Every structure is written in structure tokens, then in C-alpha cells.
Length: 375
Image (cartoon, rainbow, N blue to C red; front, side):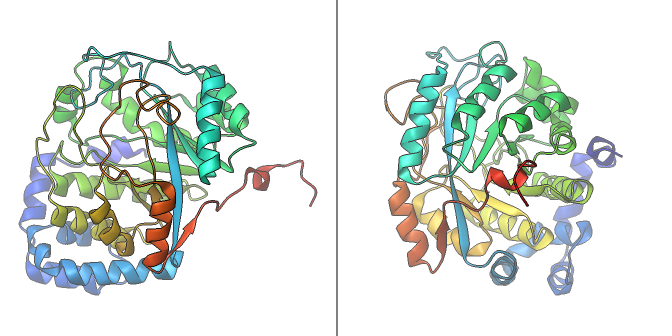
């Protein structure tokens, strides 16, 4: 059974209504159980749970400390191309937008990477628009091989691949994949993605499973907050993560919480998510997924990131730039979206320590997978 088969059980409108009709006693029962499941997740995402956010936060904090200690892994995105063939209405890289396009040479990718390495990063996320003609599998594999000496972990957030493509990435030194479904509402998905390969809902939904079959060590998912209704989207995101963790148990599953930010094209959120709702969603998913990584990017403000840090977050980006070549040349090309927290990596590191946590620059090394290494 695939997650697509599982998703067909749910009608998004009925799901939203079921979540909204949960009562206070349902929330109390969900908070009392040791391992919440789908029924409890519905209660924790309901309007009734808004009065229990403080209790949810306390429990989420305790679970995270128990499972992860006081450690926050730091990573940085490295954008290598903003060329894209998709028409996503909400994205600054959309083919609909008349903006300068640029793909970095491998030499320029290494230059950007060395800048991040000098900042202390050992975990990196390679990001592109979705244009396999500009950036194909061989280019990505060559980039990963070139950067392997600099980083202990290399992840990708690029166009969806077939399983063989992900195996090629693994062989080249890539160990992680980030892929957002954006919305689990099929009709809304079609409206937001009017053309391009990304308009194939089913193929994108199955992407994490293909990554798991290829042996990727990390897989990150998420929905774009502000597109669909956050309660039903959060519920299906949680079930998707639960499905992946059970079927690909050797892979670490993480969930990100990207919220729509200003970008070229001027798209406005269809269903804005308040800070309080953001906290409710984060805590609900921590209670459902005690062992999952929860990721917070620089899309969010410094103040909010500081306050969310103790509630279940295990990974944070810092000092991010969303334009190809933007670390070495801030005016290089168009950003995918505007970041909100523009503090330097060193400043974020100091904040993490001030909160009583440890900023972790490296928690993995590719040598662990080297079958030729001596025992």
C-alpha cells in the first residue's frame, strides 16, 4: 500500500469538518494517551485545542528533550539555480515570473559552499528550481561529489526523480531529500500548479517513497502553510510522516513548517496561519511524531524562532540566502522568497546557547556508510 492509496480514504472537506467538530474532552483524552494516533491528532489540531496549547507545548518540550536532548542541528541552503519550468502561483522562481535566470557553474557552487563551510556549516541543502534541462541528475551528482570533502551531510531539494535517480544521488554522496507536497488537497494543488511537471500530484506525492527505496538516510516533508486549511493539511502531513517512518524505518523522517513569504509574483496566502496556530500545529505533530526531526527555517522572524525553539524544534537554518550565488554576491539573482530572520550563523548560535541548548554543526559523517572502511 502506498501513501497515495492511503490518502484516497480522505475527503478533504469532510476531514476539515471532522477536525473542527472535536470537543474539549477529545483534546484532554488526546493529551492523556502515551502515543497519540490519527484520532488524537484530529483533536490536537481542532479549534477546541486552542485552549490547551500551553499544555501541548509543555508535553512537546518534554518529549523533545527526552528524545533529542538540548541539541539543535544547524544547516544552510545553497541555491544553485532559479531556472524553472513550472507555473506555481506562489513561488518567486515560477516560470510565469519575468525575472533574471541563473544556474551556477560547478566552480561557483564550490565557491558558495566554501563560504558556508567557513561559517561553520557541515550540513548543507542543495536547492534548485525545477528545470532538469538546466540542472540534470549528472550535474547534481557532480556537484555533490565536488562538495563531499567539505560537508558531512548533503541533502537536496530539487525536482522529483525516479528511484534510479535517487540511487545515483546516494552513490554521489547525497544522503538527504527534502520534498514538499505543498498541499494535500488535490483540487487546490491543480489550481496552484497550472502547468509544468509539478502539476502531476500523484508523482510528487510518491517522491518520498522513491527516495526511501533508494536508501536515502534523511527524508523531509511538509505542506506550504497558507495554501490549504492548516488543520486538514497538518493532519495529512502528520499521517504522511507516520507512514514513511513505518515503511522506511531506516530513514530519519523530518517535517518542515514553511509559511508563505513575500516573493516575485505577489501571491497572498489563501488561508493565513497565525503564530498561535503555527505553535498548535508544531506541538501537535511533535506529540504524534516523537522521533521525527522538526525543522524551522529563516522564513520565520527572529522573535518567533527564538520562542519556538524549546517546543520541539530539532533543526534550524541560519544566515540563509535564497538566490543562486547570493552568499558571495548579494545582488546576484532573484530570490525564491524573502527571508525574515537575517541574523548571522554566529548570532543564531549564540541565541541557541543562551536558551540552554547546544548548537550542533555536525551529527553525521558519510564515512559511516563507507563499506570499504576498516572495521
